[in-house]
Length: 485
Image 1: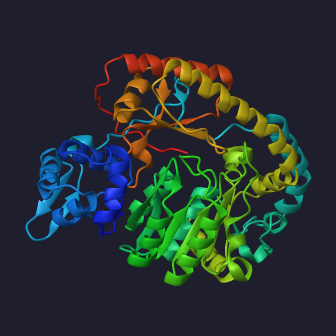
Image 2: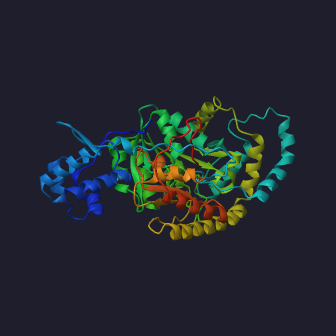
Image 3: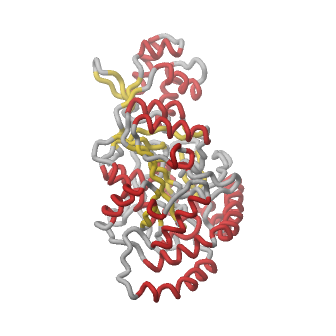
């Protein structure tokens, strides 16, 4: 099921500004239609968006109405728009452009998995953390071991971490979860109801979009492009849609790698406060700062101690090891209690041993990141060099942090290439997996740089062979679950 988008429209002046950037200053009807199609496939305008009336759009562009009429006709004929008499024209996608999932390969079959943007653990640090935690196990073993809020010492360590980074926090404002995914799922389940509107970045984290689909929330997508967030559209969406929620990844955004400017964060906080919108801020990747300083917590920019309607999600998965499944929510104490009440209906509490280990890792976080970040930086640079040699026509912006490249293939072949790559032993995700609307971002791939050099080089070679092969549709195995990280 697709993410259900809120009904929305785009004005003639705004669409004219967008389309002239991709189709030239005075496009003919074919260039105009192609410009609208490009904006749609790149997520800059959403599916089911009402296009401006022909006369209004023609006036904004400075072209004849006949040019716009012919462009709209061409969009309808090719399946990218549909109209109802007296009601207007909406964007749409042809049925053939809807993506088909790529099956998850069985473990140990020689497949290089690039769908997971998370590094392995530093084995010596992880082993040392387990050894250091061992004496505490005996102390906890005489208790039932249930801590629905999380181990008190870990909650205190996470709270102190926020305080040290500029966001005063007490342990009662922390809920320890089984990874960031549970934190996001619990928060959206508690705060949202089926039919509620939620602003989402487009593209965004695939697993969060999956939760939004399952909960029946109506997504209002806001583009994140090479230039970053569309601040004007973000503000307009908050004012016009008055969404219940907004889900954001402001730090090294997944998958684009962009960082939201500080002033834009302040404006977004003010806009959400005015509309009563809950901001769910995912800072899972915030620690992976490769070329810039780690941004301060988003909520630290809110007035009055962090903002009453800002929920922050974090995790050890990216900086330490995703196998621990330790994440958290930072929010007001009342909301933490409500989230914990909901949490116990799912898994009662997390692993005591893993939380003890997490506390040890947090105590050495500066040293661990000091070792990890240079390795990731080198892997990023090696991957970009290898991709540049093998695929000189591909384009991307070097992200200042995060764990992956957001690659423009130059043509809409991502799903077909992902299927072909799997036949050559590489699992990689086409851009449509990260779109709020299925079928968009078909010209994009997310390519993590979390693999060792020799594995990354082999993956590039295999994808090169896949690109040279027949990019045809294959039938996936419906018995295997599909997921990304």
